[in-house]
Image (cartoon, rainbow, N blue to C red):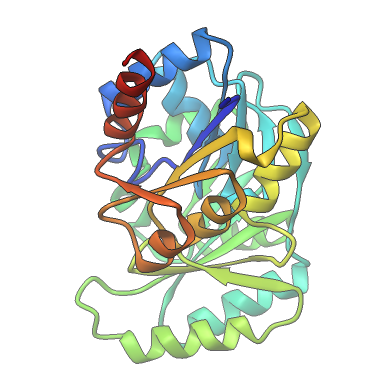
Length: 274
């Protein structure tokens, strides 16, 4: 029996930066109405997830944000637990990233800070920033904002490469250097970035910890994802479903593939009815 459904957002449950696949959301509503629990599990901040689900009129009970570094109540945003980076490690990651000519973004508990001008307008979340401020999340694209964010607690440091790929060698070198730092783990949510986080934080560990608190066993969980950062979650649960367009790591971690969350849920519904 499936008691908990968990899903990544970007590339999985979302069809673009701010809109859900309506068929998947409708089917998840049915599962929740039948007694199942749904958990959003994203690389985004908890505030971003809350804004998205509120806009869709979906009562989000639990949210795992920033790749497992922040777990919160979905409706109130109240923190259940947090796994932040040591300030020294966060500053070290930013220094490495910027020294290699890459762009850095810091996700703190209270802020999202970019290191380059114009970043806010170009961010895939730019439409959500004003509402996120209502939840106490500051956004900035200057040195002062970056410094405020680095005072912590820092949840992740994001390195972003150029769209034309001309900085590939610098990107790979910075990634390797950050991976050698003590107390951190490096993952990726998209082809143009890598993310540095506490070694204690990942989507799989956070989801299993929440499930234990709820008295739910791993085999009673279905999780959906498409990126490298989803692999720990897909591997940890009873049924890990990777999107057909997902990364190789996500596919290898999953037990099955699906064209979409909606397609998988619909197929399971048809099987149960049959």
